[in-house]
Every structure is written in C-alpha cells, then in structure tokens.
Image 1: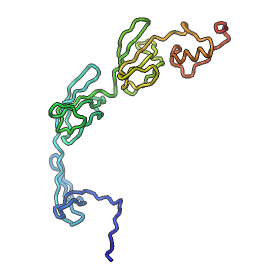
Image 2 (image 1 turned 135 degrees about the vertical axis):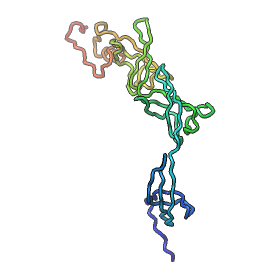
Image 3 (image 1 turned 30 degrees about the vertical axis):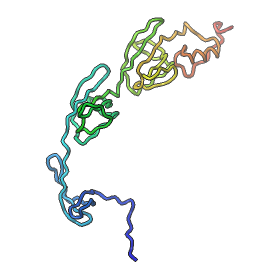
Length: 242
C-alpha cells in the first residue's frame, strides 16, 4: 500500500513565484538581493526543483493626481504623487499639510464619479477636511435671530438642552439639525451636525423653581441649563414657602 504524504495545514510557503523549471508557482529561497533603479533584483532558488533564476521587481511609476481640498468655504487644488497601482475609495482618510482629509468624490478618466478607482484611472479627487469641521449656528435672543459659524473638532459631542459658551456668552442648545432632520432631544458629533439652534438661557434671577416637581420639569425643559445632578432647592427661604 502506497504511503500517503502528511501535510501540515499550518505550513507557510514563502516567496511564491513562477518557476521556469517547474512551469508552475512554487516557493523559493532568496540567495541574493540587489537594488536596481527603482526596484530590486532577486536571485532565487526553487524549493521544488532547485533551479536558480532571477526575478526583477520594479516599483510602478508615480502618478500625479489633482486633489481639490475643501475646508469650509475655502477650496484649494494641490497635486499629490501616488503609486500607479494604488486604489482610492470614497471615504478614505489621508493626511496632507498637517491636516486630515476624507475623500468625498473620485472622478474617472471620463469625468464620471466613481466609488472606487485605481490611481491609473483617476483624473481628479475631491476631499473634505475631517479633523476640523464648520458648524452653522442660529442664535436666537427674544424675537431676533442671527447666523454664525464655529470651527471645532469633528469628534466633539453636542447635546440638546446643554449650555455652551459662544463669543463669551452662554447659550442653550435648543435643537440640532443633522441635514436629514431636526431633533430636540439627542447628542451628535460635530461632523454630523449641519446646524445648531441656540437660545439665550434664562438667568437664575428670572426663574427659580419652588418645588421638587417644578425643579425637575424645569431641568428637563432646559430652563436651568445643563445640570445632570441638580441640587435640590432649599425650602427654608421664605421665597419657597407656599
């Protein structure tokens, strides 16, 4: 009975290339490595038949791609060198000019948008700054409203009902708009926010709850600002006596 060979399922074959002696892809041992131009020449020995031959590895030439980098209302065009065999995908994040950018649009050789393309088939890339974002504000004081903008870290969290300081003044976040809908109760990252609606909060002199029930309702409605563990009102003062 012919003995069957035992194979180790965990065995790893290194340096698999086409062997001219075996006429198939086999594992090889590297005998010599010599830099040549923009690549390397390897002198290899086939692990199966023992044939020695040379394999040339060359780095694909770089290709210069125009990138439109948008940071808020400002857009600049820069030219970045990429390896011709590299692949870009919409949503990829990269660093340039001490900032982070996210690929938002890839145009192919025909100028059509593509979700994913090799660098050799790309004519232009559009990217948005991802580490800092611009959040639009609507500031409402009484019956008057005015727009404004803040530039913040894209990971910064904002919650409705909380108090934030803007230009030295305290404001309560009344609502947050994500672009698809507005919420009066929730938390979002700055990168997901299209606009925040801020109202001037009432001062403590203008409103003071008299009972525990009023205090909790006022806190839920944001009248007392952001206070996750509000102090119970003192009923010793005549002001809180019924």
